[in-house]
Image (cartoon, rainbow, N blue to C red; front, side, top):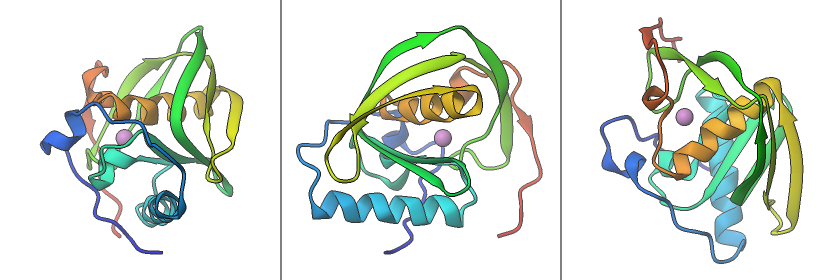
Length: 156
Ligand code: NI
């Protein structure tokens, strides 16, 4: 596994609509593994492929330590209710902002082995999945936040 460079705001790749993954093969698995390692190294709870410069529809997330989700070609099947909370993004270092998100979602997509999985998420997990899904559409949370503010960055 290897750490990948995280692309930051201002790079046009973060604004692209990502393309579907044709097949979950060893190359895709290797990239997903690199994404997990990169996310953990950066102390993030999610990372989407465009954030490492790949315009493909896939992301990884670890909303609770030790529980990693990989979604390839994800689809949000249902979104219900609203919740409001603060978010940050590894591609927008040094900032946080308040964003309104669905309270509950149902999402499906391929897992690391190429098998279809479907989950229901609520609370913080729903926020993380929606944030990462947005990356695949070229959307950043700062587009939706009403009150972006600066935060102190943790020393690496
Ligand atoms: Ni992000």
